[in-house]
Length: 240
Image 1: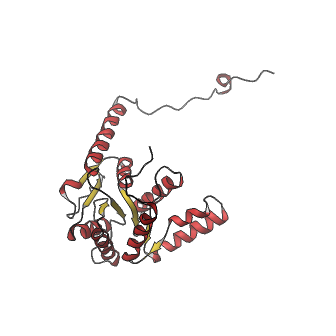
Image 2: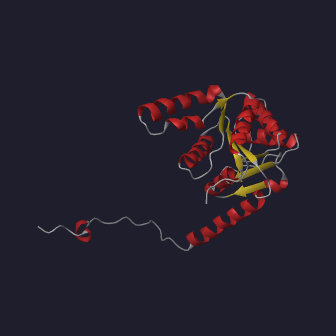
Image 3: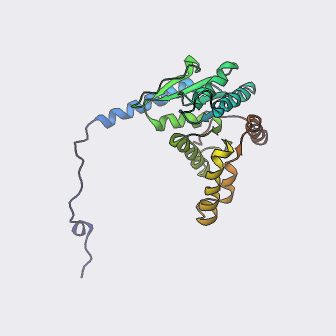
């Protein structure tokens, strides 16, 4: 018996889009390019920065808010600019720390159905608005010399695992990724160690070195400075 050709074998009806796809996809490409151009033109001038992430729901009287202000202050005094998602909570705290102590303060806002307003501590010439999450992610990574993740929700975890994947796959130069808040992050790191590494062998042992956990702003700075003392000059990310 002759084997069936693909055309003969697949007789099932094929799914179709519920509505016709029009030229909107082509116009979307131009919107994406426009966001990349605006982001690059603005942030190319900002110099070495640290991207700080964390929950938008944290209030100014919360210890994590105060910790984010202090981390931004310490980094600002060493000459680093601060990049955040531009909103309230931890983002506001980090921008505030940069603003109050004379540092560069950038906010990369995202247009959401529940409107996110920019916090008041962003430099006017470094306040960007994005429609697309993936463009915004490029900006977070490209100009950052380190990632600092304070406690947060899905957005914080999304940014964290995005940059870990980029480093693991050698798409960007490895730089410090620092988890701030031992009581919050220790359980996640233990799960990664036990389930991903020891039980599943889904990551390599050296990948665990990418996730230091600290509580002290000075320790954040020490890790960053130690890294660049060993690796040399500061430069934007992404290997082309």
